[in-house]
Image 1 (tube, rainbow, N blue to C red):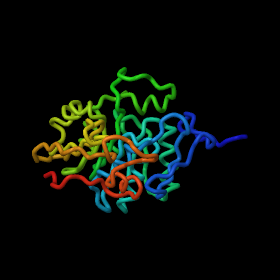
Image 2 (image 1 turned 30 degrees about the vertical axis):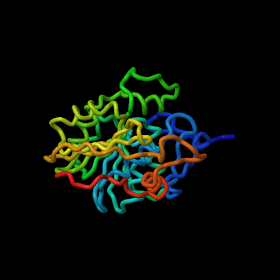
Image 3 (image 1 turned 180 degrees about the horizontal axis):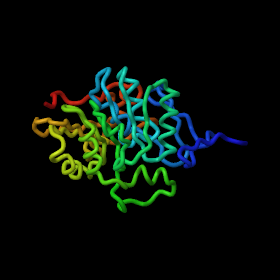
Image 4 (image 1 turned 180 degrees about the vertical axis):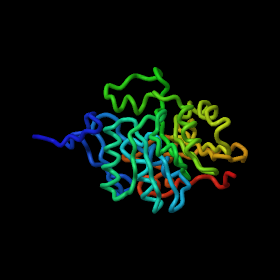
Length: 269
């Protein structure tokens, strides 16, 4: 059977037969993504839920993949001006398709962070969000699929992600980034001299377990003291005891209903 294969800038795209249509936020979003290769999980959903955006504001997602994070954010906050940047042309085209399929206005540029299009370099945004590759170059087993390999293994230094975010943020704008907890020292070092009012929200799998992920919130020109919040628990109980998921109530409302992440009280200034 023939399948439609989309191509972008002479690079092969995804065949429809190789894509799955997956529901997120209790079916509010349908995301087309490859059946094999890099597939979005809960991390981009949590990232989007952490963003304190208001209707009418502008959002830039660095490394947007197929668009899951910005689509989840747009489902929660109306009338956002969304821009995405994605290195891999096939995923950038998929993000455009997903935006159209979910009736979300978004401009997605195919570009390397180190060489953004001229028009993007002239813009400033209220929010920048990012879910960079989790592993340092050479620090994990290489995936066979090129898309998954690029998404998981660091090709662009984490410091450059912070530099681009800081340059593209408007004064008092926010960066939100989700990363592995063991990359926190790298994140703190990269933010130094670029962003202030740093807050870290650890995400721990269960009570008594160390955090595996962290969400960083930082503000351009922020002067508030550093804040390390208590961990947010992903699951109920100390061990998995029942069939199906056992997400905590707060996480379940984020994943199933598109609610905002319960960020600890207090504002960065």
